[in-house]
Amino acid sequence: MELGENDLFPIDNALEMILVFDRKGVISYANDAAKKKLEYENDLCGRHVKDVFPNTFQATEDGFATEYPFGNEPQNLVAYRKNLTCFPVEAKIVSSVSHAGTYICMANDILEKEFLSREIEQVRQEAQQALKVKSEFVANVTHELRTPVNGILGNVKELLDDVEGMDARTVKSLRLVERCCGDMHKIINNVLDFSKLEAGKFTLEPRRFHFRNMLDYVKAKHISKITEKGLGFFMTVSPQIPEYVIGDELRIGQILDNFLSNALKFTAVGKITLEALRTARVNDKLELFFMVSDSGIGIDKADRDKLFQSFSQVDASISRKFGGTGLGLNICKQLVELMGGRVEVESEKNKGSTFSFSIWVGISEEDSDTPSQQGEMKPTVFTTAAMDEDEERFANIRKYGTAENKENLKKNLSKLILCVEMENWEKAEMFMETIRQLTEEAPQEVKRVVLRLKMAIQKENYDKVTAGYEELNKIL
Ligand code: ADP
Image (cartoon, rainbow, N blue to C red):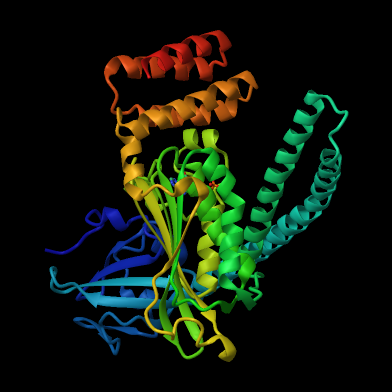
């Protein structure tokens, strides 16, 4: 059976030219691209293949003669149009396995292909240039934005240094301005870092620094909020890490800062832990491993995969409630990779998350035998003031009805009503979420009261909140 004009519909619209000819050299099929490029209408079928490739095929009595090496390797040939003008092509001609005596020719116009690849290269260069211009623009704008924000922040701080004589409302407004400026500052810094990293213009600034002081500084930034939320905080530092290391202190602190902020943001009940270990040494380089764990809302497996993409937040309702730009983790990942390491996340929905990462730091000769080489030492464990209780206590907090659970519920309820009285609904919602989690295992009637209280807070209905508060307080 021979292939004919009507047999090959799926390749009719292919971009490359396709011709089918038989052992006599007669063309039985030509797709649209072949007809168009060779400038035939419907009269290509029935022609001899030598009309298209006269330098490669000659007509003989019983068909054609050729030196073309049929096979899968493309060859450069010259194709002739109907009007006898010609152009170079890259062609592959194979002998059909299923239809003996049938040959299939697939050919691309080389000039067009080169033109296309030049076009693609040009588009690629233009896109790269546009990306560079965009990144530079973002970097400039964010840099310029910093100045006015710093100006406002500085002035507000100065005013807040001397609040005597000011009425309570003014102080409250100034504190709000201070907080907003702080938030804006963080966002600007994130966008600036992100655009620098994207443009490949980011450089680390390694120098010798006191490792534990850096950790203490990071801890100090978060501890009051952690305690305010009633969470536990445990920090463990391996004695194998020397006192001084060489690295970009600011950026290591920034990564830990981001993981701790998220742990704090997404944890209502339980604890946060920070662990630092030394995992390897190669000459004057140490590999350090950090782990930040929380007992918060956790992350679904599906969401974990997109976690480190820029602007990614797990779901819109979460970002509305907790804020954020979705840049933090992407920046952390890029920074960690610049420091020769990688970030990992383990998490279970409603059970908590652990973000871990490794980095390489330097060690100078004078510090290399402190204090790790002095034999086995126990890790240093730091806990916050509110955390002299052991870890078991934190497990009990979640269990409805235990003394720890009751105590925590009462604490959060009184903080909640205080926020409502001060009309700080946003913060009240935070305590409400903690109460909801603490009563997850409670009997149905308690859960109903909690739900009513939650709705009243969302609607900012003062009367209903006080009623709900009293009802819950009575139960407790
Ligand atoms: P953002 O500035 O929005 O916090 P991140 O890049 O730091 O941006 O985090 C991206 C998203 O990852 C968060 O919005 C949140 O959905 C999720 N996430 C990050 N850390 C945690 C965590 N410890 N627990 C639960 N979800 C988290």
